[in-house]
Length: 475
View 1 (cartoon, one colour):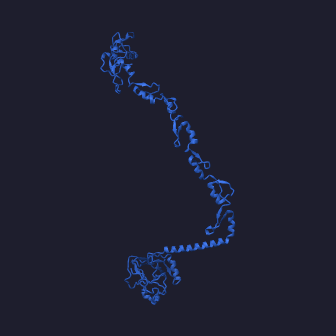
View 2 (tube, helix red, strand yellow):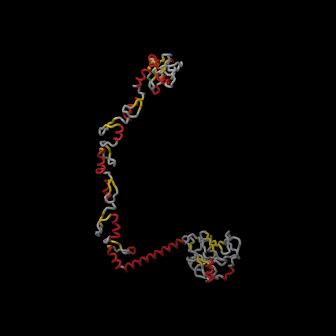
């Protein structure tokens, strides 16, 4: 080994330093021929390279003239030094010869574990290692009293049969671990147990209540039909389809038959009660027809407009016009509507080919001409009404009856194109070549637009389905 590499309190003198390693000499030797001193190890390494000359003066060397120098060794071992663990906190200092004795007791010196485990640690950390961390330490189980090494104790801990533990099912019982298996299988009230009938698992203290409601519990037929026991969930199907003594309702129960008898006797009842069943079915059909008529009437009432607005579109106009030409006085009726919720029920009719009822009043009519400008004619439905008498509002005056041609109220709107009438207003709406647009204002000031796709011909709306006595105010 080369010289001493320690922390000296004082710088060593030059004569104590090895010329080869530059450190205080360890086991110094002296060459007698020249008097130079070296570390024994340093000189041996130098000579092993095949150079047999003094490193200082290059004089030939002879192994026989190299001797130990005890005086110089005493001087080197007397040099004061610090502990090699001074940086870690050790404050010892003393002669070099006392260093090994100090290291044997120094708390900062690293030593191997006395239990021969692989760990190496400082002497001050050794007690904690031997007590808690050493895998070779000896430990005694507090429950069974057996001694174990550290490694074996870790495996034994948590499985000791003498250790007192609580039941895993949380029933509150506490016992030795060796008795836990027997308790969990036969004594614990919280243990799980399969049902005898449905094989599902339940807690032991609730399995009895489950068995009373188990769908697979064998039960006898309540009608004592002789089938034996069956699963509870199969009982309703048995009573409905298979049980020969079960009471069943008559197939005509919806028609009113309330007879109830065993299933085997039901065929005889049906055979003997054909006439009563037929009468019940006829009565049921009659009631359903009445209900159907009532529903249709309510539907018609709901479908009729009650806001005084009617938008009437005449479909298949070409076909209807041909029918009107082939059949004189053929009348086309619009859907019914009301002036308001509690008002008159009105209906508009149109003679697509005319009816010739007002030929003698020809001065009031003229053929609608093709007009390129956009116009809209506005008129009130009661403009041509003659106010009826209050006490006899149903009696129409003779002159108006002859004008209308019928006994009940009918309104004829005359389109006075030759004589402009202040009651009509022209607004922006096109008159097409095949129709006109009628804007009619009801009693509540609402306007009804009638779009008729018709050729130039008299249009004759009429009142139908209600009296015309109370004439609403003009809008």
